[in-house]
Amino acid sequence: MRIDIKIKSRKLGRTIRFMARETSGYVFVDPGCMTWGEQLFDRNGNAEIARSEAALRRVARRYISRVAAV
Image (cartoon, rainbow, N blue to C red; front, side, top):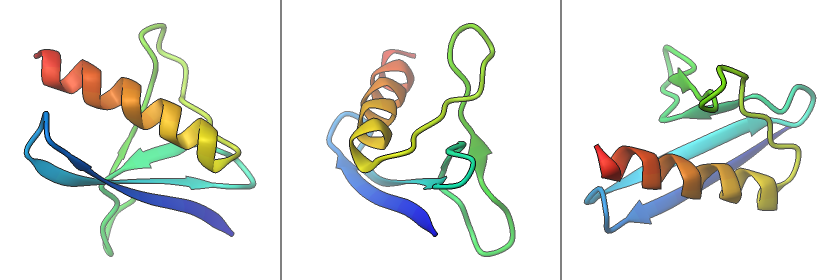
């Protein structure tokens, strides 16, 4: 089982897909059919974990804000 959301970001000008496995909760951005995509880490170097859709949406908001600021 997994949690999967797509967010159409106006800040980045594209749709971004976030996915987390319910068993581990590790968050990946833009996973493809051949790879898991990019695993997300917080500013302290710890893996982002989301065990619910609400938690995954919080991680997604932080990621979009961080990437848009660059």
